Image (cartoon, rainbow, N blue to C red; front, side):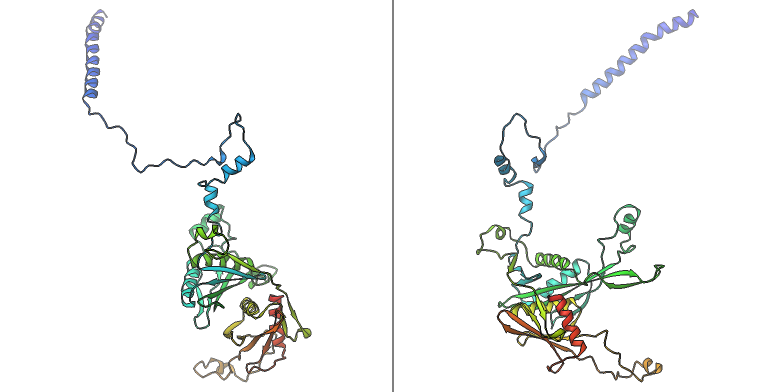
Length: 383
């Protein structure tokens, strides 16, 4: 036992000397290391703007509401910058309004507006189903409405990965119609909407069909798309939004003090009297034809005539002697005469009124049930 105690006493100074040597070595290494350069501030670093909207005021300071309002509306604040971009005016286009109908008047030729309108619908996800440049008609295909699809939970996760997995049961399509404006070098743009909804047809909910949604057209959606198309037509000019009236820039919406009422006379036989002059009545009738799903083949504004095709669902079906094998012979020319277009005539009745009548293909008077139905459909849109 004494031998181990003596050995421990001899080893203790050696261990202490070794430890001091290690510490000294680390100090020497630290002293021999090169000095690092201090952190430098990047030259393009800017101080972030502090939003003082939620700053707690000093309770010892005295202020007034007028001083508070001046501080809130001072230039450079986020609220002031955001307000300059809301409903910013467009230099080369404007929205005009007649009653509850709106349209765009663009300072451009129809060919230029056509290319922009076509790109607009493609950019927001619609396909082009029909385009007729000679008549100025551009119609999109049906597209499912994604706004009502659930975005939370498991369904929301699946919808983000597979967008077409779930449907909302609603579809929309839009028709764009271009016309040369009353002012030289301008083009008028009209947008109409058609909406469908999927409904169950059986009590077991195992069969569905598509039917018009609501009244068939949504005026709010039309106004929304007109606003988006207006922004597409030209870059907004902030100076026009703040300039005095009558100087640079065009107003965003020029409202007209006109009545949007109409009267269908002679128990539905016509004429349909519109409480507008010819120019506005022509525009309103054109929008009404688009909204009710008529196929407008041609138009002649100088004569006030729309050439439309309409298949009356209540008209009696024509009898045919064709058999089953005759219908399979697709190579034979069809013996059925093509559906003749009706003429929707708009005339100036004076006193700020216009008359709308439906004529046969030859321009004569037409008193059939189909013409009554056409006038009734137009009246529902114009009344």
